[in-house]
Length: 156
Image (cartoon, rainbow, N blue to C red):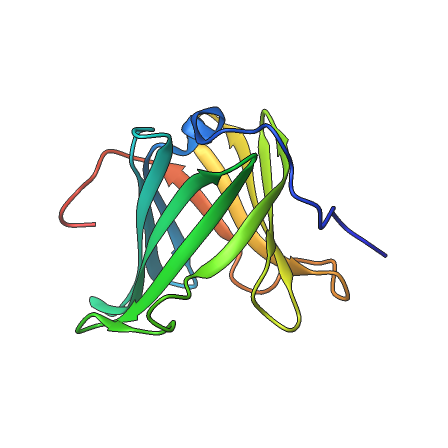
């Protein structure tokens, strides 16, 4: 069973995805998870993601939604504290935009042997649910993020 397409969606632009802009916060089993998306500029969006447990950062990410030709890619770099990168120097973790609706974005993972889809669903102006799913396991993996939009708070 194929859950979503594996073919890139042609014609979408990062500006079409601007509803992600803002500061998003989630609680995952008591851990604080946050994702901060910039406004669209230079035909791209950038984000910072971090996962915090017991007031310590477990890991963080830099994310970019950018166009390349007729396609949009989500590119991610993961880091441990100390800015220790996970990916090779010139190989970010890549996802291809394969579905775009007003309330839903689906990206297909390009660089893993058992690829997943990354799904962002807007459930209202201040709520986004994000998760990963495999073709062989259509239920989302543990760690579904129920984000709510908030103003950045240095103490959160």
